Image (cartoon, rainbow, N blue to C red; front, side, top):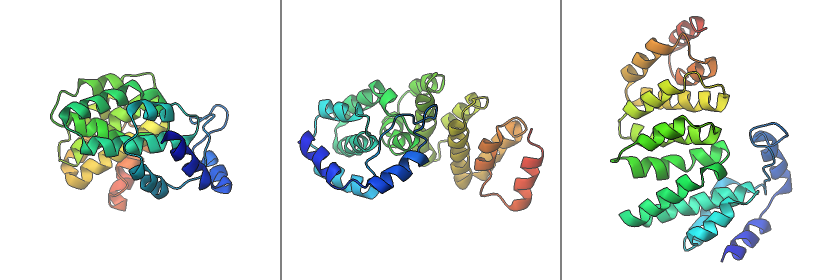
Length: 233
């Protein structure tokens, strides 16, 4: 079944699209996606194909996750999410543990963003969330982004506390992909409770990285955006 999946992906590969994606996802030497190889398959196609292979075992999904081909890793995560949604609590725990054991292979921002809220966030909704704080302290960019994006699941339920705490922990992070992720989650909080977002901003906006602040206030009125940005260092 695994070989069939790989053959199906190869059959719809688009070399021209692959070149565009390799530039977009920064796969050059020294860039965050260095060495990543693309087939050039759009996400909706991968989601559709993933539904046909939901019986793949975790061992097979691990093989896909270890692939240097981006679409192999992404489709393995789509299959994992589909399995998670259909699982009982014991099986969900296995999938959650599998995810955390393989975070180093969930190594580009789309892989994180499309999976972390749906597995880590969903699993931890009513559980101890200490693991997120450990991930936020990691020296690995993608584990930190997993910590941030997992809280999106809580934000949708109007539980902002963990997201705000992790955002505070990462205020001094050096990577713009963390700045963007934190700013995005703050903006999502603001969509649901603008006072909660503004309380955080009023405490931290003077020292926030500019990209983080810009993402956070994107939906604010122009005058208000200008006021925040002008006083940001």
